[in-house]
Length: 87
Image 1 (spheres, rainbow, N blue to C red):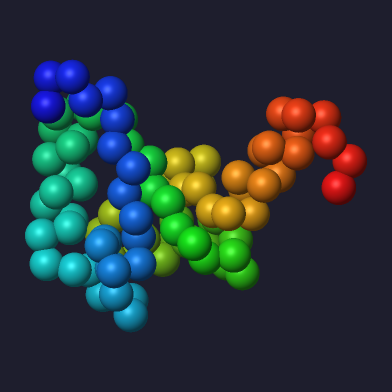
Image 2: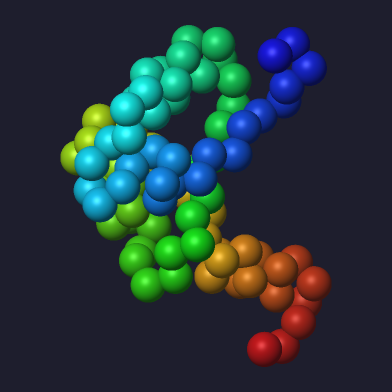
């Protein structure tokens, strides 16, 4: 892991499923924190606000800042802004 600069972690089916943590996921995230390795969460969810996704993660024991969760909507908005596009 010496050359690893960061990790992207999918949420649904990797960290949780149907509102419950998947076995080992909480421990794996804790280990990344112990290693001081940067990580972010990604999801294909488009209808749930980032703050709610972070709140749902907290209910299973994962503390995540909303700014550390990336969705397709956020990616599209960022691309439009970064390229000065007019949707």
